Length: 465
Image (cartoon, rainbow, N blue to C red; front, side):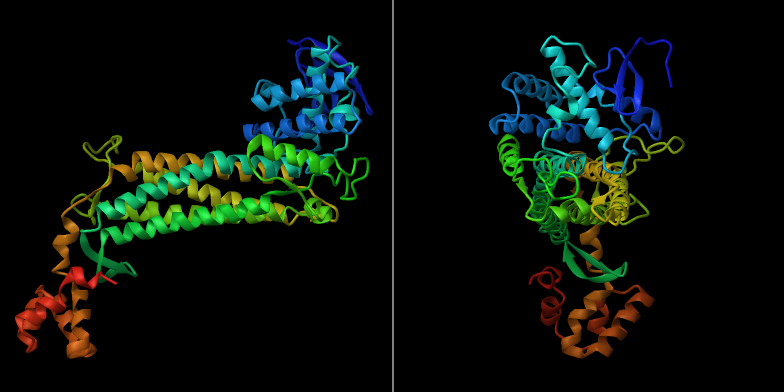
């Protein structure tokens, strides 16, 4: 569709002439894709464009090293690709995520932008493909079918290293600090949402910290999966039109550049026909999201009230909670964390469906899988930091938990070894009916001494392993 408010240049591809905005660095194939996919307005995230630019940059370096690319062209391509890596050309990456399933449109978007910017650097005419050609030079030794899955893996590795793991470690540390702070707070445990034997508030928080700690370990295993990349397989995994040393050398350079492990797969046919590593990584992220949902919901419930709820902890008051009820404050940070967890679970469902779309030699849902994986990493990262800073760090224990311990019906559990399960159950039921405590009824119904009752009904001792 032509916008009469813009000036255009004419470019040509294998299908004929195309009008391209004069100021655009992309070319004919990107322009066609822009018209073909006016779907959502969703774009590939910054991390993906950074990874894609880095692949093109290091590919040019390696092709020159292998004697396949002139040094003058190499220098211009490297300079242009560096601008892509740095984000200086992001406005020229215009395509919707919902596009050709291989991501060919976005690979060509990168090839055209880098080629045209290199042409500018060399003083040529943008759109001329001279002296730098998007396919012959920028895409040399590559195919969309191996570049796009490699970019997905690389972008995820960078984001996990720089964003997610630091955020999760920050959350884990904050939960550990709260576990220590709350270690002396004895309260009633709950199973099936019903009263159970005593537990320390610090032990509950140690459980939360343990979930995040294990989530970090699962994400680390996902990094191992993602480190194996498809580059070098070109069209169908056979490596046609690429130098046998190309992929390994590019991977080595990418590893040094970003401080992550990137290695050429030993089986290109699985790396392009399936994105199982992405599915695995998404599963790890989903597990972290499930942990986050559990922790956020527990904190919401433990802070519910302040008069008519559990109210064993007090959450930081960060904003007014109601447009109609004055003085109401809601657990909004925990709620936002729970919504992020739900989004990550939804993203995983899409990635799972996408992973099933490896038809013969190529997966054809790569763009949406890339978008969802990187979105999950990003929002888990930002939420881990926000949840830590605006909620967990400011949690306080109240007196309500300890006050209710002596009234707890499950203290009768400690009597069972002495008086038997049935007798202890009767005491518990009568305590519930009458409002008396377990201690009071044990005095009346058993011959246990006061000293024995003190020992058996020591709530703190019941929490010690």
